[in-house]
Length: 186
Image (cartoon, rainbow, N blue to C red; front, side, top):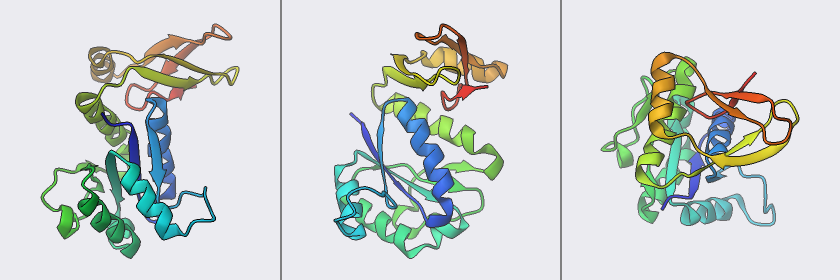
């Protein structure tokens, strides 16, 4: 069962990592990051080792800068030794580092990053059980939990270029969700 995911990225890719963490949060998965700001009493290296050891899955975000980052490559090396599931998220044109060169990456262009996040969620759904979805209502700000839409509905919405629909259990307003990331659309 996959419930905790470690996100490796360079400092310049922090916005991409935050977007991935939000998408994982929506499907009730916990994420760790190399730039994790908590537990400052521990060294950054110890936070990295703890995060990778505690994770069931490791997702390196590899852009041009990320693939060339010594820190990201050290995290990849540690993850290979710790043996979690590794799903590389790779910008088009970037070559995978040698230790994970044999893996099948999820490739993205900067303008299609949300599509890649949808592929990650879809792959995680195929590997583990995802039953719940967390949604923060864009109207009243309340956070609610509900069953996640079946994958068939998600695929139907993606093919039709439409959204998923739900209702806020607090303010009763309809909420439209991006079928890739389950993020509310305003």
